[in-house]
Length: 252
Length: 195
Image (tube, rainbow over all chains, first blue to last red; front, side, top):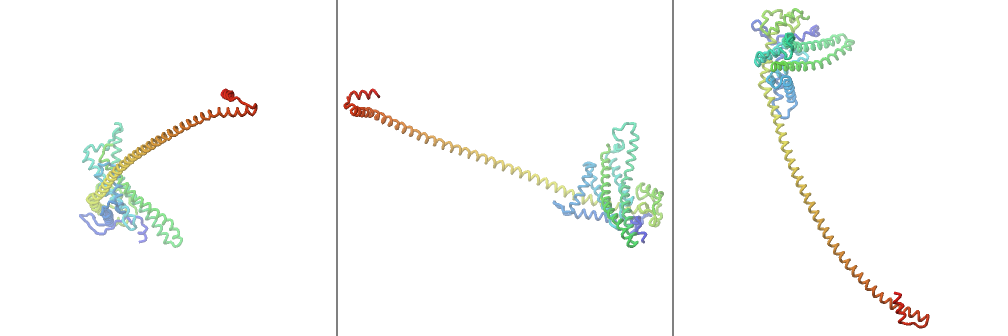
């Protein structure tokens, strides 16, 4: 039990709440599922009730919702132009989902859904999938111009195209790993320092005095993690906007 | 404690292979993973995570697309419309105010011009009156001066006539006292000659 408490990996364990096996696969409702549901409900409830009145002069909550909306909208407009606004519901959903999931993860004993690579990878694949499908649907084969920059000497072309292809293929990986690794590393660090406090505290008075340092560290790290949680949601959304821009304007 | 490289590599390609359907044979050590493996790389949990992600994210997306985004668009459009309308009205009111100010200034200028004209007229009249009065007085004075000069001339003439007689009597008296007798005619001649 004591070992569990200081084990920094323990917080990432997925525990089944309701067992749902279907055709040999485990589709159980787990703590991860629970926190996805909680995150979505929280974000949806906030957005729903803060905008319910639709006041001309917004209340504080409505202001927050509007600021988030405007923030994402201007992000998308800056990156992808007005044509990109058709993806706005998707980008807004993505941002709110990741942001809420990240922030929820900061609470002690809460599960961080975005600390699992499969979730971030699925979201990244969703983005890239949309980019590829929309790109081909809109531009047909001209979408492949994405890999052929104009104004490059013919000799260099194979090399440049190869680089472009590799960079495109690595996008979902970097997009997902960035979010996943940030959340994972942050939570592990926080847990390790918090674990020091517990271990040192168990060693009597001298230990208690020594525990002040890691405690201060844990407090500082919590602040940092708050920043990281918001920043990573922003980075995820802003990169999504830039990739969507590639789908809308493939020739660069 | 930590994941072995082999384990990680096994998990990653499966994830990239797209999704939930690939790994049929990963019934593997469900419980063993709970004990030892690195949870984020445990493929046994992938189907559940993907399913619930699809459900929650999908519903959230629909909710956003159907309810939240249109509603917020409505709010923002109403607000910008209201602001534009208010600005229009403000511009209109300002125009009206400007027109009122212009009218007022024009009236003021007219009134000022009128006042100037009236003042000028009054000044001119007063000046003319004063001039006339002055001329009348001057004429009167001139007349009086002429009369006075005439009178002086008359007095002087009469005085001059008297001077001869006085000189004769005085000369005769002096001669009588000095020499005892005086010739009246000679004295008169002498006085006349002296004048």
